[in-house]
Length: 227
Image (tube, rainbow, N blue to C red; front, side):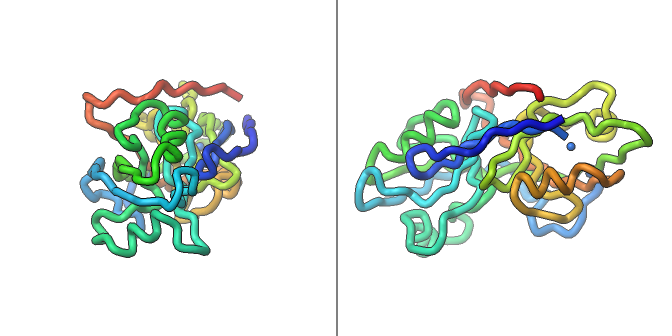
């Protein structure tokens, strides 16, 4: 089953997410840098003209724990794009990164996203994702067994729960609640498009994004509703 609620905007920067239900093995072509050392963290300092000026991040806060950067807002020079233009690539803010704090404010995704309008100078605590491939092959009559969340303007599917005895649990037992599916059989797109792509194929080659904070970092509790 699947259920969702529309994304809403928080502090002009945040696209909030939702809830939806549905669900790879070996490495395919690697535009995601799968296998690159994960969980690298750094601070990006950006400056805004006013406190309430959007930073230029489209955030997906669906899992409640940590804000996911679904995309960078484009079309005009935003503070984040201006920061990236003068920063080495290794320290640029990217779509797919996790925003785990702003100006020292940490906590759940909504708390952190609200801090984006707290000051004209923002210290963004960025953490790169851990990316890995998993293959799930459904046997005849077998359910995929994933309850997924997605955002209308997002670019991933969030795993809210995993059904025991399902294809996902059998083929990829290390999948965890909070992981994000960012590619399905080489296809990327919006959350709704990814959900459509995952529904029917018997074999699913998935790229998974995982937020892996250090053990000492306290993140918010993820609350999800099963569909």
